[in-house]
Image 1 (cartoon, rainbow, N blue to C red):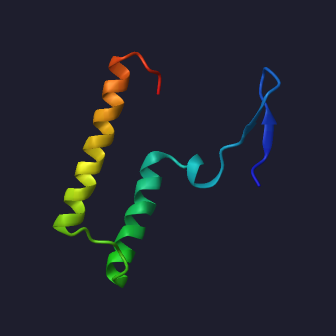
Image 2: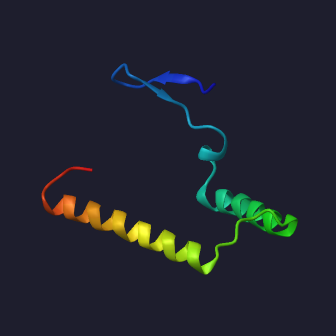
Length: 76
């Protein structure tokens, strides 16, 4: 479990360790290697045209809802 540290106002926060503590470029390098390995092993998901279309439509619908909420002054 992550260590807990007290900050200046007495509340506790988790310390940043492991993957989260790495710089962005190092995280990308590791993720890239994982993606390549998955494709080489044949276990990576590859989107069909229909799956991609459905995902894009779903994302567009969610985006449309959130933008209309913001126009009404809702805080997300």
